[in-house]
Length: 364
Ligand SMILES: *Cc1c(COP(=O)(O)O)cnc(C)c1O
Image (cartoon, helix red, strand yellow):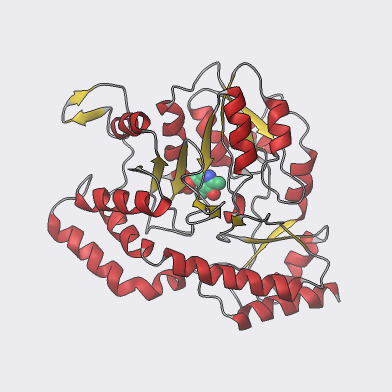
């Protein structure tokens, strides 16, 4: 029996009837952009994250870059980002014309290292943009403390962390503002692109509501040169269905992760350390080994799908070539050794046992 890395049809199968009803409801309503479904989803997701505002946008990259625009961060400013992240975190900064300042991860948590953040701050630094990598919250107390001392914004990249908790509070409410993605493969995934911004900052929320909608809050009156980046009614209706089951889906992921951790305990693979007080939502289950490529080939040959998140670090991408990046040895070491095993709410304990058995067989 083979095990896919991820099968999105199986993720959504339990919700098919409810999703069909939701789509039918939108179809019949005659309202497809910025109607009741998006307004309702924004309210429900804000409540879920424990914040006052949620602003639906077209995707996660827009969520992040619009937050930067909302704070007037642009040319001449610097934004601190993790060196090991999906490229969207970096692109959000380059999109507004600010300078990307990459900071290395902690070697054990794989999340941005707060100590190194402090060393990267200059008089031009405006914001820190931590990523809750693979669903595990970054060290937000330390990050917030540094930000307060230097008067910086903290912008969470929460694209992999819907429902994750830090000190009892949800991702999305751990900084000044947060960007979420509802890309189909995320823990809360739409049937297409989608994104959202969460914040307790009333002024920022109002600016963002305009920015995402051509700079307008009154039809045909444009106060700023905004963009068209809206979460549509169909995606909102689908997300409302799936939000009701997010905690249950995340609990299933946690059970899969726990089963992996137990089964892999006596193998040489290293796992990310999840510090006390943080609750990961296991967007991915990533193992680390110097024999990554051989392990991946072995698992592929035995019918087990894997991925690498991400195979080429941002500073090595052609898109960011020719810039004077600092040496980032921790990031490069991680990138050469990480492997994502199958992770989804539908996986059974037997599936996990099968994957773990093949990992053990590889190491003999
Ligand atoms: C998916 C993702 C994004 C971007 O989301 P899109 O909706 O694909 O634009 C940003 N940051 C991280 C860490 C992500 O994983």
